[in-house]
Length: 172
Image (cartoon, rainbow, N blue to C red):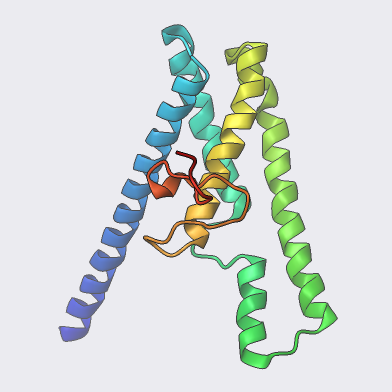
C-alpha cells in the first residue's frame, strides 16, 4: 500500500515537472514568435502560416540539439576535466564528434524548412528571419552561460544589462 502511494506520488511529481517545463517552453516559444513577427513585419495574412511552420521548425531544432537536460559535449568535458584533470585525445574527439553531429542535425532541419519559410515569407523577410533567429539564440546562450543577476562584461561589447549604460567610460 505504501509502495503504491510512493509510486503514485512519484508519477504525479514527474508529470508536474514535465508540465512546468512544457509551460516554460511554451512561454518562451510564444515570446520568440512575437519577436519574430514584429522584427520581420509579418502581415496578418502571413502570421498563421508562419506560426505553424515556425512551431514545427522549432520543435525539430530542439530535438536536433537534444533535450535540455542532456549535457552538451563541452559540459561533459568540463566535468571530466574537473574529476580527473586529464583528458585523453579520445575523450576530446568523442565530445567534438557529438557536437558536430548535433550541428549537422540542426543544419539538416534548417535545410528542410528553408523552402517552407520561403513559401510564407518574402525574400527580405526570409533573410531577416535567419539573422533574427540567430540573434535570439545568441542572447539565450549568453543568458544561460552567466549566473543570474550578473551581466556579461565582455570587452568591446555593449552591455544592455547595465540599464542602457555602456561599460566603458561615458562621455558627458
